[in-house]
Image 1 (tube, helix red, strand yellow):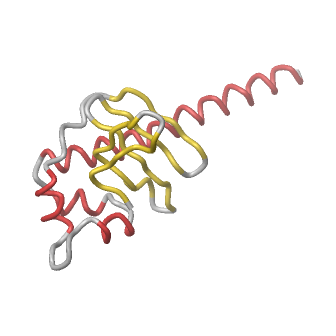
Image 2 (spheres, rainbow, N blue to C red):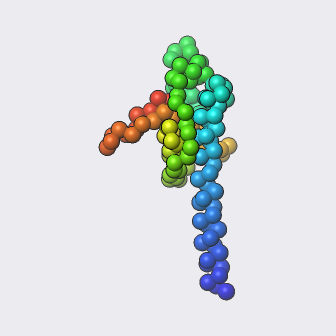
Image 3 (cartoon, rainbow, N blue to C red):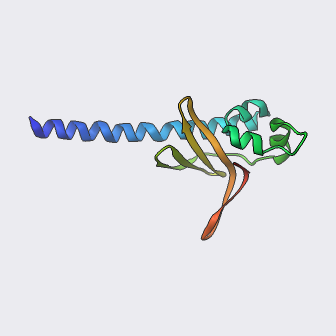
Length: 126
């Protein structure tokens, strides 16, 4: 009986981890869907406050700044990596970094490209 409980607990823990990766993936896909549909205000609402505040130039709004960036298509899901309340979501056409808040996952950086051994270079970042 004890072995069954341990196996069940491990199965539930693994299932919980799998479910956790879907939430940041959905948030990343939602961000790209909003940008692609020219709903920049909605995309801005998916950014962390710090990222949304840092994105625009002085006198410019977040939506206008996103519109000017012309972020590429997100594409299909490649992978999701989680560490604590942070996630990296790799899509076919973009890499995004997200943070989990009490109300859900928000985009910290998008339009990111790997730079070898250096940190990613991102179009949108906090």
